Length: 255
View 1 (tube, rainbow, N blue to C red):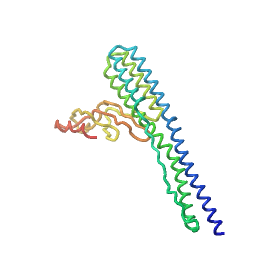
View 2: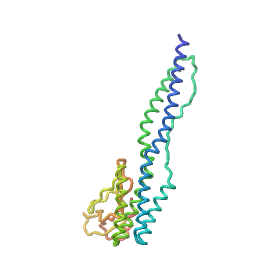
View 3: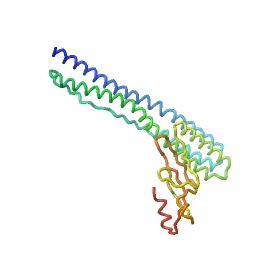
View 4: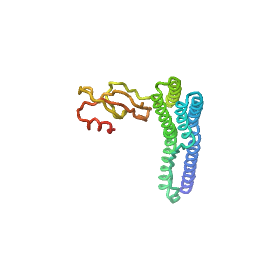
């Protein structure tokens, strides 16, 4: 009876070890599938945006066309040089076998393997959410940078209607792509009090009323947020109640 119990426990233990190996293999296979599924749509969106820059580059005047060429180059660099970072957390178990003649040690090892198997499948479920963030975040950050570039050029070409319109179309398309991934611009209004967790002061204007201190005057560059938190702080100009020039200058250096 003693011998049969030991053999049964050893067989069950081997089954658990096989299960852990299968879970690990499934995790690796899932990583490959998930990488393709999550990154391919964003890469396709970037290709569409690149084609748009090429079209506008032909249609606009030389100066605006040069700006579109710069936008296209940024997208091209993203498509050719940005590598998707893969993060794979594997659980390495020490594959040591206890003395098969001691049932107590076998049962303890079996319980340990059962717990490890439970953890492996729990981690597999958590892995999806982790990989969704880590695989798409680099491309989302590139799209935010691309939108900031469109925003900058739109201000630079404010007097040229055709170029401005083209940049508005580009910017709107980038915003649509980001929105489909749950990333939206931060809402910032003039008169709103500075919130350093979401806004970064890059300039100041003096004010005469203490109640207006650190109120936002204008947005220099939009910020973006997602369900996970702020991805890019908004750069803003704020009011500052002070008569000391050095204090005004030091405000922009705070984060």
